[in-house]
Length: 236
Image (cartoon, rainbow, N blue to C red; front, side, top):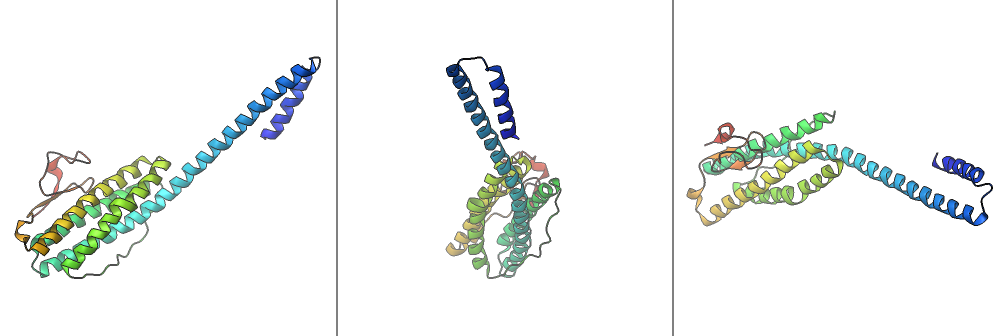
């Protein structure tokens, strides 16, 4: 289409400049060609950017599906780890696992809303995990939460930003920031096991129902979502 228009314009210019000096004709045609070339490149640039945006949009929903499956697995896994901790006499660790499980389920729910908002449905997930000793579970959980917080979610956020998917950005951001806190809690607990100072562990946890942010002391409102503390889920 652009080449056809280019040819037609040259014909019209040639008719208009029929009686003009040759040097003047060449100058005008040169300016015209440069302008058309610039426009052509601009069109290709915009088209390429649009394609990247569309591809990022498709990939974002795939990422949300993956994140949803991961959070649903974590929800079930941490509940199982809570039961294991209880059988080993670690009541306060079981309490932490219950709180973290609830937080992960909130992330899954948020991710599901993003997926459904895009007109898709969440994929069926059958959680798979292995229950080991509480100490082993904590060691693996620290690695898992670190990966989520420093690699997986940051990568997903970059794609969502390219797609300009604002609700995906919000949901992913909530999850990433919360996973950072979960990693810290697990590190603290594992350190207490190793140093035999479990009596110092918190006996109460609070979870924001909007974003999953997890606290040992409830602030006036959530740091991430600004949800009032009266709405926090309490584990004690």
